[in-house]
Structures are given as structure tokens and as C-alpha cells.
View 1: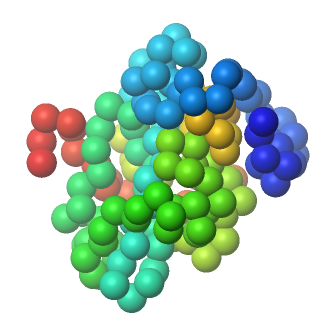
View 2 (view 1 turned 30 degrees about the vertical axis):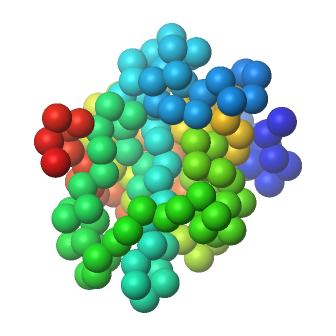
Length: 156
């Protein structure tokens, strides 16, 4: 079930959402299969932590990977992937279900490569959910910074 705080944001912004059995969309590939869309349209949300304690949530296409070197240039320090416990503590969501809406004290960066798609689908707070939105709406609702922070999967 989509958390109340997320549902309030979805309704306030008149966003369409989808719910599937729990655990059926924990990866970009499985989410794309359930929604019958391209993997790149899945807006995966990945949390990174820096030594200073600053947190960065990167939202990028499901067919790309976050570039730590590009993120380091933005953060000004080396980021590391947050573990499951930290992700849950800071976002209220488990990895694979992180919703970029309604987060506090987290710097949100939307990868500019998501702009390629008319419609993108971030998670709605469960590993069986998705929100249908546009790149522009995603940036507006999250208050995110837009930057190039990803590479194709074949690059490191």
C-alpha cells in the first residue's frame, strides 16, 4: 500500500499511479516489464551519503548507472552508496521502493538523461508501485537540481 504522505502528494498533483503485488517492481527491469515501458523510463531513486553526512538522492533512468565521479563533482566530496538501513532511516523507504517525493534534508538530483522520455515512472514508496509523471513534473515536485550524473550501463 502506498504510504499516506506519498498518496497526499500524488493526489495534490493529480498524478496517476500504479500498484502491483508487493515485491514485483524492485528493479528497473521488473518495473518496466510490469508497466510495459522502456527500462530507461523507470526513474530509479538511489541514495548516496558523503563523509560530511550530506545525503544525495539521485533519480536516473533505469538503463543507466550513477557516476560516482560526476556526483562527487556536484557534492564536493566522495559519495558512497547508502546501505539498506541508512536508506530506510533517511527516506522512510527500502531500496527498490524509494519515492523521491516528500523527502526532507536530502539533496535531490534528477539526471538530465531522463529528459529523453515524455513519461517517466518513479516508485511510489513500495516495491510494487509506480507513479506516472513527466520529467518537468518530477523536477518541480521534488525541487531537484538537474544534472548529468549518470553513464550508460556499459561504462564505468
